[in-house]
Image (cartoon, rainbow, N blue to C red; front, side, top):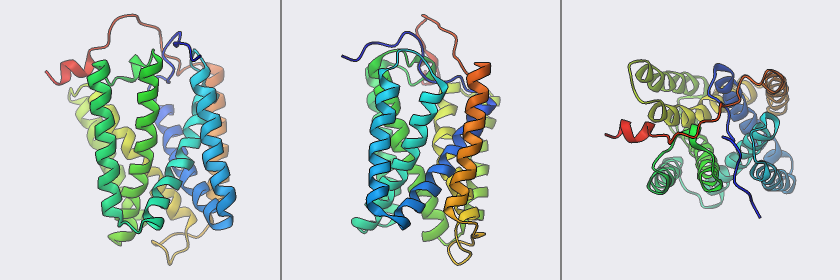
Amino acid sequence: MRREPLAPKVPEITALFWVIKVLTTGMGEATSDYLGETNLVLGGVVGIGGLVLALRWQLRRRDYSAPTYWFAVVMVAVFGTIAADVVHVVLQLPYAVTTVGYAVATATVFALWYRSEGTLSIHSIVTARRETFYWTTVLLSFALGTAAGDLTALALHWGFLTSGFLFLVAIAVPLLLWRLGLNGTAAFWPAYVLTRPLGASFADWFGKDHRIGGGLGYGDDVVSLVALALIAVLVAVVTVTKSDVQSWSAEPDEELSQALG
């Protein structure tokens, strides 16, 4: 039986959190594409098997562990990319349609989460139900970001580098609004979703051939390995320093309630 957490099971939001998060999105994009081009069966085994294993470890823990948490994010990144690509390729749905579809699905989970719990704050992930909502949202946000990045880079023919800078500007908007007084939770989730197309666009720019979105052609395998090495180093840093461990608070979180009036 799954037991309730003893403390918040997601990291505190620091500068390193955003750096690692963007790296996981790029790594997930490059790894998924490499596996898909190398061996579809292997890609499916790694994507689905890795996701099940990682989330099982994460959900069974009762406290926050940086290696366990970021391993789960890495596998969600790989699976989310595979899921978005499969829907586009197998069902022959345009990127505009898949982007809108994943956006609606993400918004629906947010609505159900808030209706059930009264908050979307990452500081409130202290029950099994809230953690389930959290990881469902994370998974959908990766699929949404993948579809949105492919929409701008490929369907709209803007290329990977232009798309990367577009999403870099976009992610600065919630940060600026937060600095101007926007509620932290309301600013966090748009920025979180935008990390996916941001990291994936730059990963594709480094890895893909110039004929595909204007890439530099270093290869998806190289991009994946470099990103994974950087992730490992940064996760080791936060594991040792414990700089991303949230302090326990029994007070109810009302951030979003206040933001919505």
